[in-house]
Length: 535
Ligand SMILES: CC(=O)SCCNC(=O)CCNC(=O)[C@H](O)C(C)(C)COP(=O)(O)OP(=O)(O)OC[C@H]1O[C@@H](n2cnc3c(N)ncnc32)[C@H](O)[C@@H]1OP(=O)(O)O
Ligand SMILES: N[C@@H](CCO)C(=O)O
Image (cartoon, rainbow, N blue to C red; front, side, top):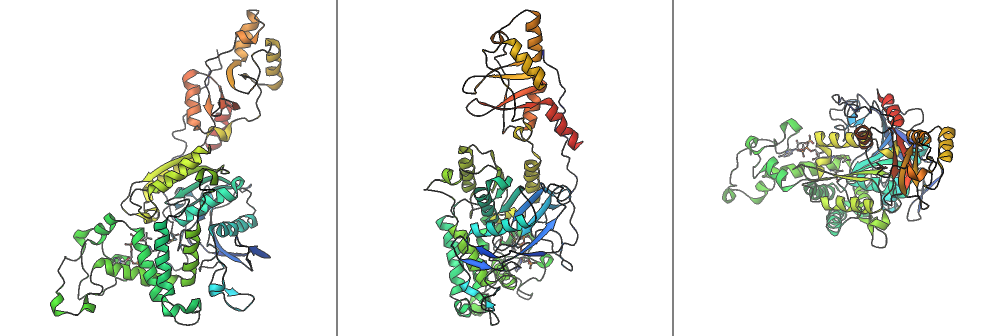
């Protein structure tokens, strides 16, 4: 008989209270000391990184989650800047009791190098010339973005990030983090992304860049203090924005509806915007082409007006040269090595959650599945999930319920590897009972896995087996080994271990790898101690 243990259920450990908003938040800035070397070999000095932090770091700074933004995002991921009506771009998942729970984790988000929202980029002043860099700014890669973030993380005194997360280009940074600095990332959540940009993605990037560089006001990137290439930048955004939506979401948002002729073309606030369902939009009418000039119809469909609005508002918040550099960095992104993603991701150790969006045709689900396949082939614990949504690529900014559910589950999931004893004691089947019992007494353990010369699991003996053997005057361990031994894998959820223990009334399980080698032990005491931490 083994010591029977009641292992408490984990079901109710992580209860879901309603998420709240952070209040007013502020941005901070850090200047990387000395020279910052880029992947190209070029260097920059006085590199500034704009960042925001929500929630408190714990004593050993082990609760920090780094959030990486997408193409046109910034450091303002959540909460409100003083005077703003709209919160940060990922407010739906960051805040008290949200998936990125600021009561529990400290969230850090920084504007990428190359950006135009406080971090050093093409619009920044080159300290050597006293003028904006423009296109003299060196070519950037996702590696450079991650290396700049690493400088910030080090400056904040963080040894290992509890998690790194992001969608789209943010997801690329997540992947890059786990490749460049595997030991610094415990968990990784990559959403709506790819490990290697495809020709179609590059093609959209290229058209956007051409729209900018063909605008005469771009002027070889030298437009600061003059008229900006707003027309080209707006066009680039309009093209890009189409790829962030889906056929279904455009049908639902606009149908073939037209703007009301008398009314203003561009709603000023979202409440005046075209409603989401076609029954609420203005009636569908056929343009009376005969009596009007073509220009009267230049923006008459709601979708045209919407795209114009998206293009126009974008030019007020983004720098055209930054757009060129960042889209190029996305296009350069390719983690495969010698044509193999398995090889490219071979050093990754973080536990992964990879999420795709069913209607995302820019970064389709198969690209996320490829990431998961490559990680799994490397023995990485990687989970694949799909967000069911009609919103298209931008669903990672909108699907509040599904995102919170998936992320919360992943972050709060505790695996056998998190609590198993890696320094364990074992015996060989040729051992004497006397030696086995001496080992148990000396090391204060009740279970000894029996392993072969090549460390494979052959069975288990418990202190109770030994007691019985002594009573029956059995001397050979071989005669008392339990060979039908229950075990778990290090990537199994802790609930799996606890149910096996409960079902078979046992209090310790060997942890094995895919080759049946014993790599640790998990005990009911360690599970109970963990529950104590949360109760
Ligand atoms: C990812 C990062 O890291 S941060 C960058 C994320 N932010 C962006 O990309 C900003 C631009 N993108 C968007 O707005 C994205 O579509 C989202 C996902 C952020 C928001 O999506 P939704 O909430 O569905 O907003 P929607 O796409 O309907 O756009 C609303 C805007 O369009 C305007 N609009 C709607 N219909 C029309 C129309 N027929 N004509 C003109 N304008 C229109 C609204 O007035 C509103 O304008 P506002 O943003 O200036 O207030
Ligand atoms: N709409 C988002 C996602 C692009 O991938 C952005 O502009 O950053």
